[in-house]
Image (cartoon, rainbow, N blue to C red; front, top):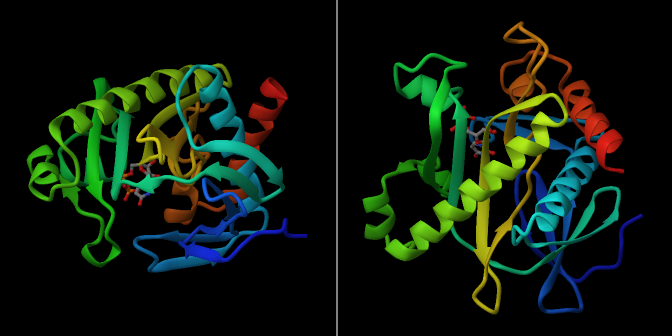
Length: 244
Ligand code: UDP
């Protein structure tokens, strides 16, 4: 059953966003759609919406307790999250602790290499352009952010990384990298928005050596490894055991 909601504001690849009767709050519905490679690969995964909503909600609750400002307000039902309305900054902010994915496709760094300090990459959220990697100067050139906003976003991203690494290590999981989206609330406050889930993080089982078996995130879908929902369920099982 759906909670009562207002009109559909936005439909993305993995979520639908609805108005509520409070102009400062939104209802986010997590869908079962899985997409990769700019939606060239598409599938339905039963239970994904529910798992991502539960995992994201637990992570946002944890970050909130640590003092990280996020848009999360409440988990309503299995696949629904109540969130503060923000003006989303059109950037994907990727924080990397261990080299994988595009960093290894685009540089000679070998997959699995531990980075000496976290690397922050900005991508322009524009499907038509294929979400290109931006330099800081291009972020300024496009007028997306000021220098001080870039600094504020980097500081908040590193804070999220510090707490998330701790969160996952406590579950015997390694946080390889993750993508954040941020937005400005009506009062101008910068908030972490969107979701934080195995769709948006690379998460490896710390006790498994095998390079494929250890993957518990969307790379199972991207790389046709099978067991996608088993991976997501294992992440949720550990979170639920530790934090419920
Ligand atoms: N990511 C994401 N959405 C995107 C692109 C990347 O959530 O549109 C996440 C991805 O799951 C990974 C991190 O950001 O945890 C870094 O992704 P990368 O740049 O390596 O790109 P990929 O290899 O996924 O193409």
